[in-house]
Image (cartoon, rainbow, N blue to C red; front, side, top):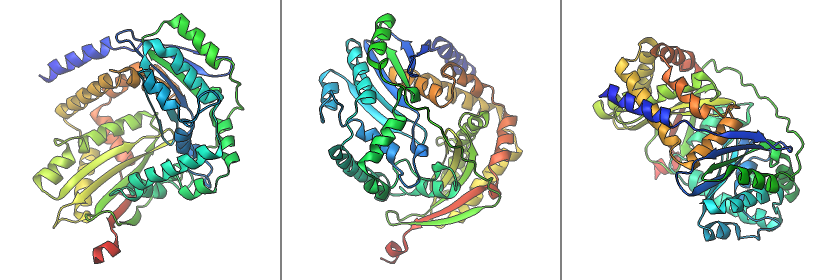
Length: 436
């Protein structure tokens, strides 16, 4: 059965190779076209190489703020009209921000491709950044922060980990940033941020779906070609000193009743092979109810209500995070001991052929699914160009996962997952709440 599944997935992967064309405009805008006539829809997307790591430490949250602000309107799209235009023409749109990039997109019926290109060119060329827009989105972002971080159970876990894991790199603050910084910023600071980063030579435009190539190239030139090239961006390099002894920290959260123990390790850039091996390790340890940690700590020993691990992958560094919620009478210390014992197994024993086959099947399936829709393809094309500098990874990255060996898994576990290289965070209910 495993062999049959592998053959079927291998056939799907081979058949699903993504063909694309890429070129540059004179202003530095990189363009990627991916033609797929299987459905009469098309996506226009623009990724800018600007994220939370590009912010001033006294003005955090700008990149995420712009994810909202650049929907306010342009010189030719009145305030409040953006979403009406999209929905009125049968489309959907969205945007998202990370520490490393900001991504905008519209999905339209294919006969509205020109509209999508015009709208994204308007966002790049003619954004209106004024006081009413800034004030409006300031309130929107504050509400988002309250919902996602301040009032959400365990909502401060990632921010607390980032603060402790990074001392020099801008990864030390969250993408949503500081509300005090946004409140203190002057209108001119927002305008300057836009002028610096939202420029054609800091962006990639992806068109994917059902379109005619020659006509699309004409429209791309028509709407984006005249946008002026911006001043080349000079980026500072931040190097963190290795963690050589356990960092111990504690955080009290008034939104929780059950403590959580967190172990976090600093890892290399998501562009590295080791980062892919760590993905495998995360899957082995905690992906699903058959994973090692879940089966042992939650199912068999019933020591935890929940257990998990994930790689927080980023362009410059990554963070590998394990966490558990103890179930009485077990404690956070007990959970950490059990987690450590499973890591030691990975560091000293080779995983079985059966486990390796399971990993390969899972990642083959994820690869197929990630390229099964035009929005997935567009996102992957933009990401591989912008952050990995290799668009064809959309076709070849799976080969990297296929080639990972049990010996590599053991080596990488030994290299990064040691007790003297980590943060241990006791995330506990607030003492005030406990007294009540």
